[in-house]
Length: 484
Picture (cartoon, rainbow, N blue to C red):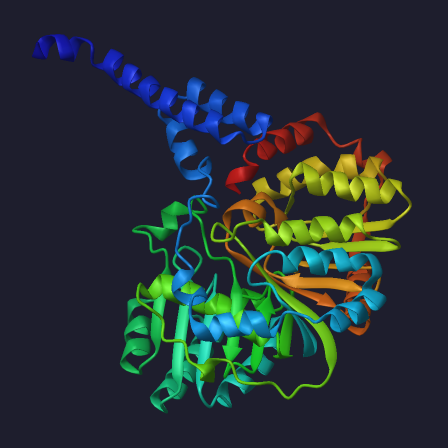
């Protein structure tokens, strides 16, 4: 019997593989997902023994339906439920918004129908260009904290700028301020010495979904891509800038990093706080103590409507992608998009094409050089279709543009963590501020127009002349877009 097994070991291995494949294929068929996606996974499972099963395990499962974590511990709290009732707009408030936003009211209604995305009206907003300005403002706000500091970041490094932040956190925690910090275990690099220092000074911190070997996992996990800072429930930050020296442009001989962030004071801090607390409840693995002190009343009188939209495997819908889709489809004059990674789904590509062919001024700004060659070529594979539809495409040449923004018709804009790519739409945990305000939208538009002065515009004729080898690299890279 043992000899028979030895002689036929590979037969048993292959048979076991296809028993598992049949089970996986049956599961995929019952999900009734996109036919192209279904066939792609079936092909990978059948053609690549075991490797196909690994790919399906990491990327084929629908985590939005099989929730990664339970939000009820936070959402069922009386304090949070009261906030939800508090920010339901009256008919008169909706009417005033409707008069200003016109077709953009579809966005407000869409987000209102998604949980935990109330419209807040009284806010002060400050657009921040690049890391140096962000850290100056953030550090000043952190030093003034009186009650609590909440930080949630994809990348936190204990390099020069990271150590400055950690110094402030340790100092505030030693003063008795409640400091809570969570960072993504794959994106961040913090030494054990730094972690010990944080703990010794009373900073509470947790890694998001820890992995054994973060340097080798790459992006083959569902990661927390959010960048959130909240001080005393009164001041908040959200946008593209992580905590690392690369974002600060310290040295002239390093790649210039162009990024955009947002500082918020006002009512929008309350839903932002709720999203932080849901993450904290998950990473700390304990029932979170939610008090009214975390949600102080705001005395801001400036009217700037903001919705905080979160998206990821923890949400019922792809909220941010849906908001961008509706914003593009309701555009009447222009759509200006900045993203470092453009690997979109068919819905976004079609929306951009249709808008451009309808006479809308549609412009896309991406980096000329990326921090990932495979992401660069995957992005390039989409450009010809856009250029054919008369979308104007610019590639940033001054350095690497990492900003994630969209502005539409001087009425709507968004700043946040979400790229226009597969990972942000389907895999990562993301968060964006959706802004309904002319002043802020015009300011963001001016930033976009300033950035394209440091960019090259592509023409369809010249783009079509790129080599067949280049096109082959693009097609190959595009195949791996779900993994980027």
